[in-house]
Amino acid sequence: MYARIRPTNTGVLAPWAQRAIALNQTRSQTMRDYGKVEFITILEPLWFGVIPETLLPTIAFLIPLVLVAGFVVFPTIHAYVERIAREAQAELEGKHL
Image (cartoon, rainbow, N blue to C red; front, side, top):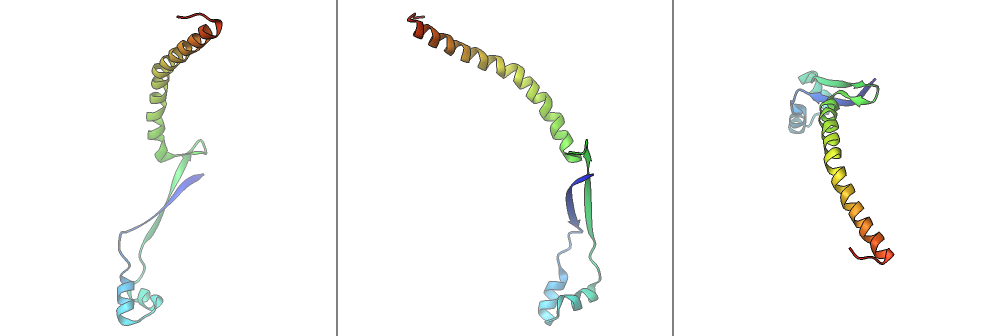
């Protein structure tokens, strides 16, 4: 399976357009004079039938980043929310901290 079909060319601008305008020719007449311009289509292979090959470095970077952030950020947020919940519970019970 393939994903992300990426057409590329040799970077040559269409020379037939300028000449066709100057000589008042049609595109097909001018293209016969210049010949063919190469056009390459690159098909990117899929990993596991879903993930494009160029996405693998991004995934390899994000997985450890998310795991580390989860172990650092989650406890901080959990402690903050728990503190707020205890204050609210104490307020509802009529106790003051």
